Length: 401
Image 1 (cartoon, one colour):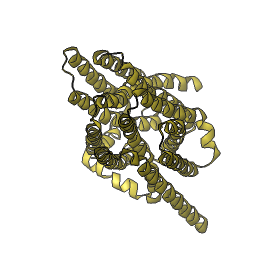
Image 2: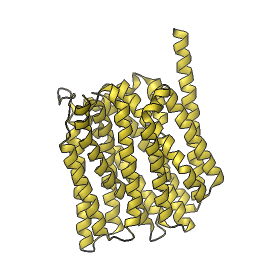
Image 3: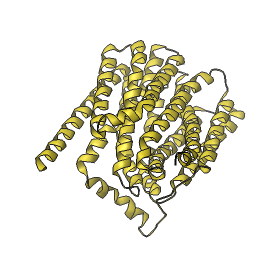
Image 4: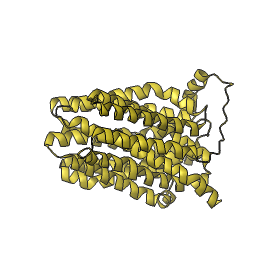
């Protein structure tokens, strides 16, 4: 059984490894490249808003697509699209046709397709593994994800100092192509068969009924999802703040690396952490610790202390996210997982869109540093509501029994 699991896991993790390299290079390093000329903070913030708005529009269709078609095939086609996009950027660079509009368009394609791949990967994991394997594969996925996505973002900032855009894009295109091949050779235990007895639109509209069936559970899950838009908010806020302070790209690279190290630590300890208590309790205390770290960052407001505390941000954010994912693995029906992921993405991207409006306003009026206080207040409020919601649910269960 262990050999079968390894045969299934190694090519899959290889696909996630190279997917992370390609996505990390475009999603993180390009943001810094766009900021280098100066006075581009508003453009980067507006670009992020356009990306999240586009992703929001496509999410209901993507979610239903995941529940109707082979999740393995979706993963492969996403990598083909990303490889082609990076290849076009490489060709444009060869003829000196690259511009901030081209880079912004490529980032949009990577952003939207990466969101599709993220939801598909969660559904694929639930479908392709048994319940006793979830914690183990989640830990391995986190180690791969953080050592590539965030590490590649930091590597990209450094490489841009020495490489031209042509070499940079070629590297990303090659990584996506290797990821596609890795997913292609991954053994797939498809439990969800393609059935089209229900119309696409009808199946998409069933999402509301899925969430309404367990309102307290999904409210708790949605509140925990706020950690994602808050951290992506910081991923845009930090480079803008550093650029305003005249800090070099090496500091942003350090931020990315330290965040990844914190998440790597979570991946290494995941099985033990999840065994300590219930998913609900782990979700609440990880969110509470995120709030504490953000409050300290907002109060101190120092680039050095921000870097020192970034490890804790990475650790508790990863613990929150993986706990939520594993809880869904054990709770949600595999045939509904795509639409559940879609609902969570709609909520997250809505908050993301609002957060990027806030960044654009803060950057425009020169109040970028106040973004840290906004992030701290948001997570603190979510953690308190999660605790109260969980406490009420537990009390009702006690009264019932």
